[in-house]
Amino acid sequence: MKNIILSLLLTILTQMTGIAQTEFVCLPCGYSCDQAVHKGPGVCSSCNMKLVEKSTVTFKNIGVEEFCKRIATNAEVIILDVRTPEEFSGSEREVPSFGHFKNAININVNELESRLKELEKFKNKEVLVYCSHSHRSPRASYLLNTKGFTNVKNLSGGVSTFANNKDTGYLKSTFVFHEK
View 1 (tube, rainbow, N blue to C red):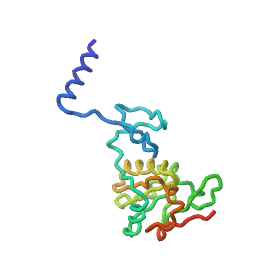
View 2: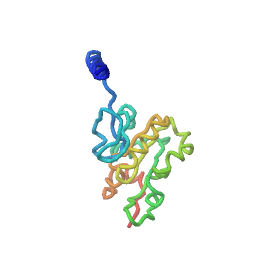
View 3: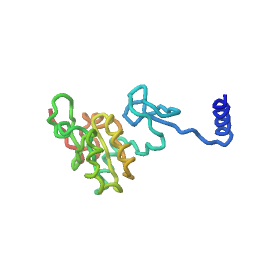
View 4: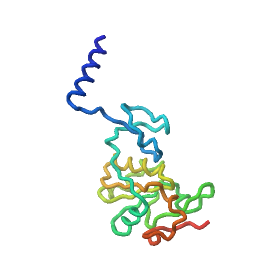
């Protein structure tokens, strides 16, 4: 009974003072469940990713035109491809690899945390992250943000979104397409 009264008092106090409860979202996975807001920690019922505080998801999602424009206009930009080395090089035969951005650093998302030292010198630079369908890159972008990278942007939809648009704006000068 004492716990019920304390819980009720806390709820009333929260509502009266305008203090918001902490909101949680799934660890960014690139699926629509990223938009669902939860009232507490746990696991996303859609993708089975850990739920994290919404306030910790601070990277920005941008489209292909903006992504390519950032590459073309910022000589200091760091481009991070988080696909497998085989997808990056075009040697993967099981799944399409599409191509890669020129001057991109390739670190598989599954190795990223253990290889962060390789990227430490870029913590205060603009870092553009991508994969094939934008399911791995949001996870990588989140990891970078939580490890102190201050200017991270994720390519919404991944490189698969422009596989057939080879002549789009900045894309011609920034991307190497893999021919089948």
